[in-house]
Length: 281
Length: 290
Image (cartoon, rainbow over all chains, first blue to last red; front, side):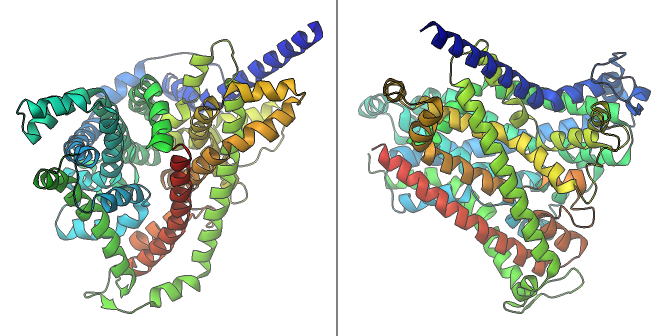
């Protein structure tokens, strides 16, 4: 019995060591981004870089936020405009559609639901050429609107699908009571169901925001004008045109930290949502 | 269920319109383009039937791209699944700091792909890269040039495994937590070794959720653009020219939209097959839970 317990403790220790090792591997690129961002500008070009930092400095952050030659603030603003507009559009449209799917009966409902599921799997690359040609004809290349419309393709299907699941999980009795008390069909949605679904809407909106913030492909093809570039394409272009790695990773840090914080905050929902999405539907 | 036909149609209209305009119409239009001679130099596209498809299937570079994508997808999905499963098994047992550790493992997933690609490119740098320096430290006199023609694909696969194992981990951990502890304990009482408990009890119970996770990851990897593009742009010498990069290059560097659309359609067929398998598995999973 004692030897069994000792063996189990040894197994636990081995597991712990293995997990810590993997955690170090998982975090290393994130650490290396920070390490470079906090290195003095000339220090990035060491022929023998070391894992531990030498001198630590804030200067790169000051540089990317104030230097007139580094358009970080512009890219950040563009990313914010594009992601927020996309999210507003897909949440408004998606919450209506999701509510109808969850609570109402109409012809073609099942076809619509299956279509939504299928569209989630469309490779964006397949939509790239037609979207580019249409945007070019409509003079929407290099505009916020063009990119926002393209990003709706990525977000609308999954937003509608996840919100449908959320509405299905709400108790129906409140809505029925409001109906009996004379609340109209739309009143039930806007006064009862949507406020109740607020946490779900917030979480789904966050996912859509992150998704748009991270998009590279559409921004790369639809935006060529430097004044309209978003963080994804702006940073990639800056990295290619300049050998200024400390500024590049200071910008990358400012781009990444809010997203990682959101992910960790919404971790519970992420896991729950995945489980619900893939198991409960 | 209320019979509110008109209200339902009003509510559904924005979503339906959005999906018709930005998803279904482009998909249809892509198929049309793939059947046309449509180059940046031609004024009027002309219908040429399946000529573009025939050209793709006889094109060495296109077939090479397909091969590269298949290797990239299989290797990265297999690698991320094994790591994700191992980690889920380790973290499903009680352990000090488990909550923090779970959050830590989400970081690669949370990092935007373009940032991940920039950081890995910098770590792989053959002069100033930390990985090159670390290889020296452990005594490798001539460390590999990570993004050379010889090693670039393997280096990309490593990045993709790092980026996608958290997804497998999260899904499999959810799958593990759904397994009743009693079954494990019963097997233990019956004298099953840890290895037997895994192979004969846990793994079979994880099979359907594993199928779902693996198919989703494969669909994602097969169409993945930012990491290969930012790290190697398909090079050196086409060594990492995955299908999405071939589509982009054919259209926007080669100016042949018809041919690019044909490659994209063929890619869509591949994804559709995996997607159908996924949906089938998904529906079965839902039904089995009643």
